[in-house]
Image (cartoon, rainbow, N blue to C red; front, side, top):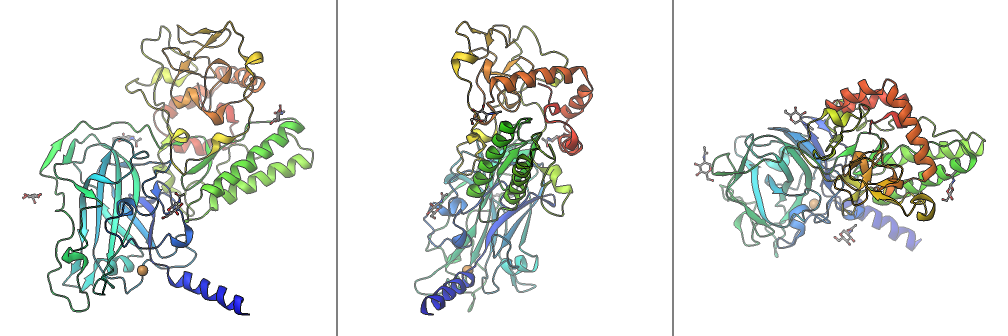
Length: 521
Ligand SMILES: *[C@@H]1O[C@H](CO)[C@@H](O)[C@H](O)[C@H]1NC(C)=O
Ligand SMILES: *[C@@H]1O[C@H](CO)[C@@H](O)[C@H](O)[C@H]1NC(C)=O
Ligand SMILES: *[C@@H]1O[C@H](CO)[C@@H](O)[C@H](O)[C@H]1NC(C)=O
Ligand SMILES: *[C@@H]1O[C@H](CO)[C@@H](O)[C@H](O)[C@H]1NC(C)=O
Ligand SMILES: [Cu+2]
């Protein structure tokens, strides 16, 4: 009984020590889904804990906040952003923040070269919004936050240069700041965003985090029980749009995008549809691949939960059951999007940073351009993009890279006489590997280096592919045949429309379209 009592006590303690944590980004009121584009603390029972050490690196983006996540959310110029703070990271119980936790709030931003790679700590931070104590209504910011169901709202400065940023909502709870020793509690986190704007300004003055606020600062030692107004300044002056420098905006997002052909997401993890199969072995393989991905999903899930993993797991159960029942044609419900954005929100999906456009086209120096079956010939070749997504170093990178589809052995797949492509074409005896156009061969036989060539449409026989997209020679051959059939069909109009940037709407309509029609490369 003793042990039982103790574990109850522990459970009670854990529940009792729920504080608050930023979990969810809303972009112009659209819910991006819990944990998505957010650097979350990865230890569930400590996720809501405050940061007490003002000199700690955790002050930048919270616990585990130096590591990036795989997704970067695109926001329009002057977007309204809301940051949802909750007492229970997985929303298992209601509540934003305890009434005792009184204090100011602020939102900081930092322009970064890569929202995924940047470690967040150090210089470059500026404050775009703050609110401390409202003397008229006698409310601290955290009290307003509570009444607003945990939503902290800001408008991103209109003149801020387009590009990648970390954006960091911060709360300071002062209920123990007067104690000895003082215990000011910071609650903060970061979202990874791409600001889609042609504006060019950046604040001239920035601060270091940690370092922007000292433990001796009167603002962190403020006694809320015997207050001496006004509340002192906390951190740097607000960026008000003036006092800026001009920089060149980054005009196109190339990292952290969600592939348009995803079928499910969980926070920053996603899965694409399983490769089609029609034999007993293929069915078993698909089932294994599916369950491996399920494990990866659960293992990478932040404390916000695993609802997307459960949806994917249910799909795998369906695959396995069909295999067992002798139905070897699959996958079932092919390309059905299992979770079109957060529950109850249809509007939100439109704000996903879906990889809905061609990020790059074959080098303009290519002697030939891709045939009419490829939408790439219709898009301006302005940028050379890096391949986004799964190759990032993030700790929460969707781990689809481990799909155990065997690499074709070199003896059977790549005759020694393979020549490096000089005309941008691949197939036959020509490989893209080492070519000027990029190392990857698309299923239409063109070399490139963007995800359209190296990812979903990649032919491993004629170049390199992103790990999870490698498929065996046989399969590649079948795909190629199918895609040629498709090119003669009605796919063109679709991919044309696609290139204009209606990714989400199209993706939804594609529910019943066979997998291999989802792209024109
Ligand atoms: C997250 O940080 C905690 C310490 O704050 C550490 O113990 C844990 O290993 C980290 N987890 C990951 C996934 O980095
Ligand atoms: C970026 O903004 C432009 C101008 O508002 C818009 O036309 C375009 O669709 C946006 N791109 C993305 C990826 O949201
Ligand atoms: C903006 O802030 C700067 C200090 O950073 C100040 O000198 C300037 O007067 C402010 N401008 C406006 C319009 O508030
Ligand atoms: C199934 O997977 C095994 C190894 O993972 C492979 O050898 C075999 O060719 C695959 N079969 C089919 C039909 O894909
Ligand atoms: Cu607390």
